[in-house]
Length: 112
Length: 116
Image 1 (tube, rainbow over the protein chains, first blue to last red):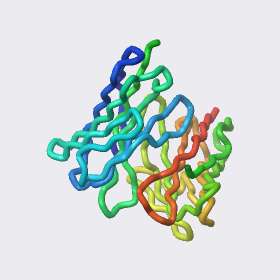
Image 2: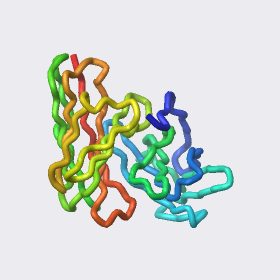
Image 3: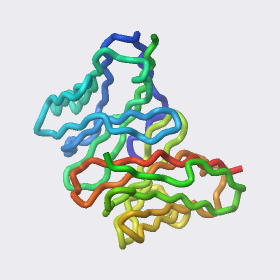
Image 4: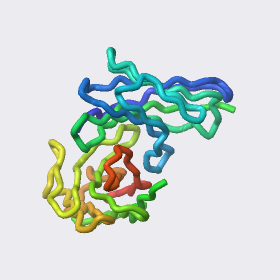
């Protein structure tokens, strides 16, 4: 398989802090990127996406930054809340291909 | 948003039996569905891509005779784990893409398979 993570890194923050979750993607031909949130025992939930012709996109409390030069993607969560605690995955889609490849996830733990 | 439903959400079976997992798009027609497998504390690994009315495309290392995928209609894809063994125990997740092929995938809630 592709991009299978062996261990999940963990980011621990306090409620109200801003969180930054990073992802290094693998394919320079990828043109579409998505961040997903996965809670325990559930399927991934779409958070925000970005296409390769952009370097920043903002949503409600979330911002995604794309740096194509170093193949790096980040997710910023403002005013993190306990309900944001979950595993976050970035995913990439190569232009012209149907499939989405997931990166190694990051576990976000938010303390009250 | 669009809804994708998986059934069953969890199943326990004996080694050697076959298990079928269903993935349904409830409010849209899905020309393409994807099946993922996820082990504990790991990422989602794509198993196969299924297009309605044609054979599934399996990822390298995934046994097509072991994991049978059928996508007979625009709203239903099934994954059958044949002759299941304990190492097949995992969380299986499907996703679906609509006919507009906008890029966004809608994920099911996953099905946890435990093989005794």
